Every structure is written in C-alpha cells, then in structure tokens.
Image (cartoon, rainbow, N blue to C red; front, side):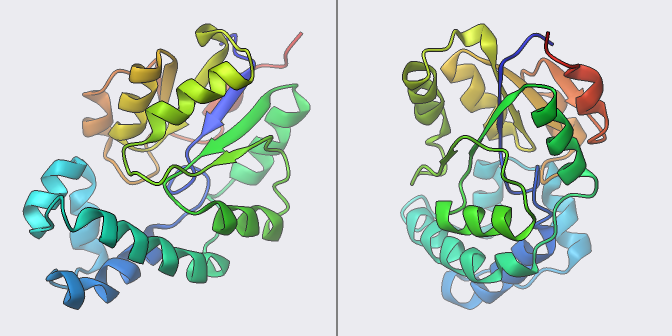
Length: 211
C-alpha cells in the first residue's frame, strides 16, 4: 500500500488492554449498574457495536461521558500492567525503519499512552491525539490531514473497532482493521476497510520498504 502516514488506534491494536478493560468495567459496575463479567462473557461482546453495548448494559447516553472519564482515570493507573500486543513492538520498529511516519489517535489518555510507549521503548510516533469524545476521532483525523498538509490518499487508519473504520470514512481516508482487538472479525467485516489483518506480521506485507 502506498501510504506515508500510518495512524494507529492504541487499545487493542498496540496495547493488549482486554484484561484491564474487564477489571475496570467490573470495578465501575456498582456505580453504573453493570453486573460483573468474566473473560468469556466479555469476549462474547466483541461482536457488538457501542450502541448495542450501551443497550445491553443499560448505560445511557447521559451517563456515557462520566463513564468514559472514570474508565480513563483507571486506565491511566493500570497501564503499567498492560503488555503490548505480541510482536507489535518489532513490527512497529520495522515500519519505522522502512520509512513510514506513524501517529496514534486514541480514546485513552495522552499521558497514559506516553507512559506505556516509554515503558516499552516504542518511541516511533510523531504525535498522540486523545479526543475527549468516544466518537471524536473523525474530527481529529481531519485536523491531522490539514496540519500535516497530507492528501487523503497518503494516510491510513489502523484500528480494532468498527468506530475506527467509521471515523476514517468520515475523514475520507482508508482504514485497515485488525482482528486481534476488541471487535470481532464478523463485525469488522461489516464495516468499510481497505484490508482486514489477522496477525501483526501481515502489516509488513502490506507496507513494504518505502522508496
């Protein structure tokens, strides 16, 4: 693929946050009225979109901003316990050496992501954007295009959730879906993406050395 800037999601794409996500959701259960989930039940939710998850949990749109803030605060404290997705550090290092520019757009906190990258020596990213809204990625992607003076065809969004694909579509850029994160392959296949990737190693096949 002929791209110059690769924009990555963080949770589930670079960082293996599933176990911590289960812990945080269960910790917030009493406050927001969720019942506690085990890993099997949590994994079964991978095929659900955000609106479906809210309907199943009983979380209202009014509660959502408060829930996101509480979850972000806890993620920041727990990120030291989070490992990278297996093989992602060496894949990112290779992409950097191949001449690709890289950045992160995340629903997590900028501070927490920076701490994670420093801990795991992943210092290849030009920027980290962390929009306040769960659905604010499209606006940020448009801003990146403008600030970096890039054509839409030069940029691709790489993420593990259907909302990453939707944000890329709204920003007018290609999207690449990875199946090792939160959303299931079936759900990701229902979205608009240039490629569906099942292993981190496939990224190296799609992004050869730049000339």
